[in-house]
Image: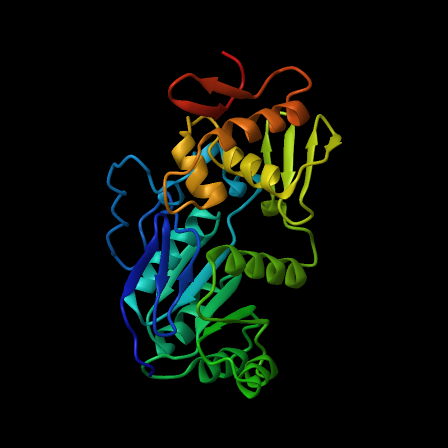
Length: 294
């Protein structure tokens, strides 16, 4: 088993694991506690620049509202990574259980038949390749996404040959992992996943095609406008300060000129709020919120 080291904070709202562990661009504690009795992540301390990416979106904006939450089994021996990964995937709309070794992974995969297994290659007893071999030998065809710091071509070929569906090397972003999981689920289910679509009122945002529609009409947005709108939709009904928006959309490590937020909110209104009801509202001295008029 490879050497593991602790999580280290690099910038507000960003957590990265060193020595081959998980790298996270956006860590958001989910609505339920991590599995196996672990305590949920502590809320961020109040400061002049809140770490907005560590705050959960309201349930009304959850992509899981479109249908049943896909069941994931996370197999990872580092308890810090298990806690962070489980909470973040729950926030992204998945039902997550977790185990910390290969033998438990084989037993749990056979017992619960999850929709997908997120499987670390470096485990204390069986490695991930042996785990997937045993799962497949028992007749379970559950899709598997490997997590590993071993990025050699022969390791990737071996994992995919044994029946893995994707191979993600560490460090990686949670957004990348979530996108890979959804892509595998779509391929294996044979149907389009609604979880990639955010909806609020008559506003729709497709995270895969990067298309936005208001009342069925296509709205053309720049990449920054798209990211800003996505953040507002994930936090529909909640007032977001300029500092939070700067941190999430522009990822500033310092207090920059917050007039850029005002400018892009204005750009977004001209494209999205051209019809009634107006959805983007300003609370003077506080921030901005996506909601229906009172």
